Image (cartoon, rainbow, N blue to C red; front, side):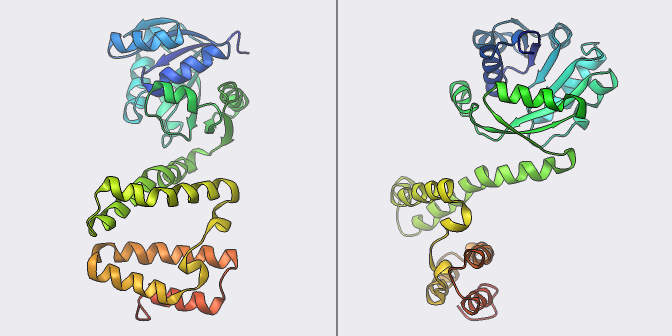
Length: 295
């Protein structure tokens, strides 16, 4: 399979360049890389091989498999333009790498007789080199026409990834969960820096203070999972400490009180599943967090 499939990459960014490089390393031929700027396409070709071009339709027409790795907002536009220019053939395989986009954004390729799908790595990339290093070992959400689903899985495996199937209907929720794990973690750390900033610490000093705690928590999450990794006052049923937290937020950081309450309620749910605290203590904590009992 790898020896006969020829890929064109439409979009010479970090993801497209890295995936093209890894496909080439796995034995696939990269026939062309197309980008709006020829210099960007040429830079990508130094990793992937093939021809650099600004003609997306020509690049697509010369390949069996087309991987659209533009920004999410541009995928449908590129697909329509390539379809209108005759770049897709019946039997072509067209994939995109968007986490949130379904198969509908490739509809114009489907109407041309192409089979369509999506392979999305649950990963974040700072640059091309880090993408090449991180993609192997990553899990990919795979959505595809049923008849090419085994092929899409095989492509992911050849990239060194682990495929799991996501329905088109579940794509937005799938991507939202990934954003919570990555983007919202950054937001939470930002807010921790803000809290420490009220005490006079710079962001750098705040990170230096809390980062060993974060690192240890992430290590526990990786080895034990979320439920067994939970520690702290809610896991212990320490209502006095939770009450002091609430009073501190109301006095010094009232705009974060609601967030603390909501996260505390979810934390109480985890503590209940862990079985580390009695139901009576959890009921007291929930009442306090909901505002029914004075904290």
